[in-house]
Image (cartoon, rainbow, N blue to C red; front, side, top):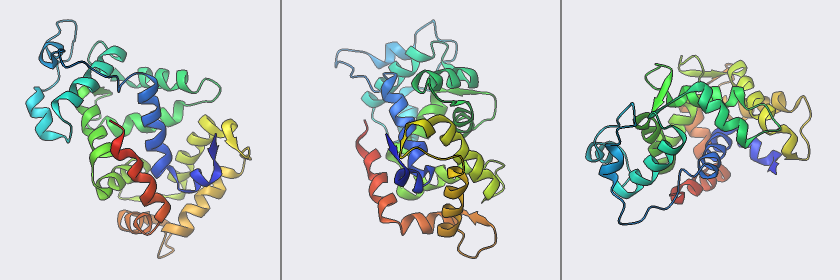
Length: 231
């Protein structure tokens, strides 16, 4: 069960943590034998969208060739066409959280990966985002999280935006927290978030306030290190 203390760290950790758990659940970190050929995988004729060359992806991310092979195998298993649209993304999350409503959460996460805003996430989009979450610096990861919460991309997080994020997590996980979350819990967590991070009390949280507050929180810093050895 997810504790309320975990939610108090705001979705800096919740968003990334739940995402990694879903990847593991659907086999995106399966082990690949040494004899397997990543080049063969990248040339499969059944794939409608072919990813960038392996060497180029290795240069642009912080993954090794073998890690990219593992990720591609898992991605291809779930998305044979080579791209995933939002509905497929939502279907994956609904399988993992059948008792909750994961639609809004999946939408926000899909938007974070769909950097080209073309309604689909390619393997390149996927590994670029995952490289930041799993291998980026603390600042890289915090910038990625901030961008996810900044729903209208205007450079600051409002209470309304944070409420949408927290409610999406509550809708998906609320029944499985301990103690059970009350209906007013999302708003309470939003208020806690702003008390910690809105340093100048102007009603919005900027990227500088967000990063500075997270870096001063020992729990967040220690927990973010858990992503270092996922794959």
